[in-house]
Structures are given as structure tokens and as C-alpha cells.
Image: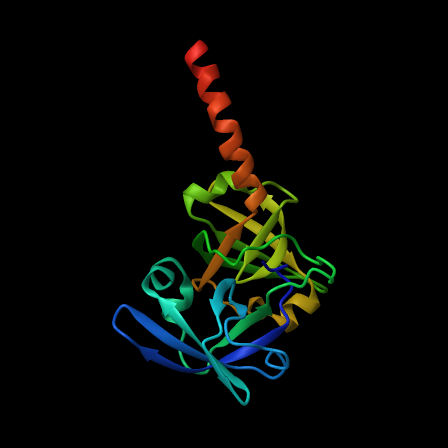
Length: 204
């Protein structure tokens, strides 16, 4: 489990294709201070498992399912990526409950800079739009954000200078793909309500 508060911008050090998978190596300055084999680290919002680490580089195995469903299939050596270690129970939950399970891939539509912040519009896959509400939570590339306006095809977020400086959202350009994870609470509510709605429909 994660919070969506990015700890560091890491750098893709190497990629080793393995047919139906790949090995992804990432260079980091601080995150390996207390790392152990098997630990979870979110990379652009994707929960990956530490398989190897040495010096300032750690490696994870990325399976085909992840490559098919996320933007990690397009990363290249030198790319910057958002990193967050799994949350600890004795720490503050600064963002919202994030699983590290990407629900879909969105696309940056436009950026509208202001003096002290920037509004970013992101196109969302149609099947995820129902989970978004104004002022609700969304995770973009592993970054916990508040939805400003939720529409049927896209949504907007406002980025403060801290977010622009410390995450990949500071340099994502229109047309680039981003990983999205909707609020898991909304998905649970939908599943619990569905049987009752079905009964109501039958009674009409």
C-alpha cells in the first residue's frame, strides 16, 4: 500500500527485455537506505518488487500483464520516474489510499500555466470516468492528486510548485501517457451497491 506522496525522482538505468517480461533497473539517491529483497516500490504508480539491489541501483521484474496495462512498456534508459516505498503503519497518510495497481493509462491533453500553479487536463479511459468526482482523489503516475473537474472523457488537476518540481508531472507534455489509479473506495462502493440496483431494476 502507498500514499501517493512521491519520495524521489529516480532514473531508469537499464532495461533488459525477456520475451514476455523485462528487467527494469532504476537509479535512486535515497530509497535504498533501508531496502530489502522483496520490498515494494511504486514506479510511476506501479507496485514493483525489489529483486536485486547494489550501490544506488535496484532491479525489478516487470511481467507482461504490467507492460500491457501500464506506461512502463514505453520507458527508456535515462527517463525520470516517480518512486515511493510502501507506506509504514507508523507514518502519516499524507495522500490517499493507493494500491499501486494501475487501472488504466491516460493521456496529457493540455497544460495551462498560471503564476503560482498549473492546471493539467488528462484524457481518461471511458470505463474509469464513473469513478471520478469533483474534489475526489486520483493517482497520476503514482502521485496523489485532487480532481478539480471530472468529465466523461477527461479531468483536470491543479499542480502546485512542489508537485511540479518533485514529480514527473512537472515535465509531462501533451500527448504523453500516464498511469492512472482511481480511488479504490469508489470501486468497493460500486460493487456493494450493484446487487441492490439490480433488484430495483427487476422490480420496476
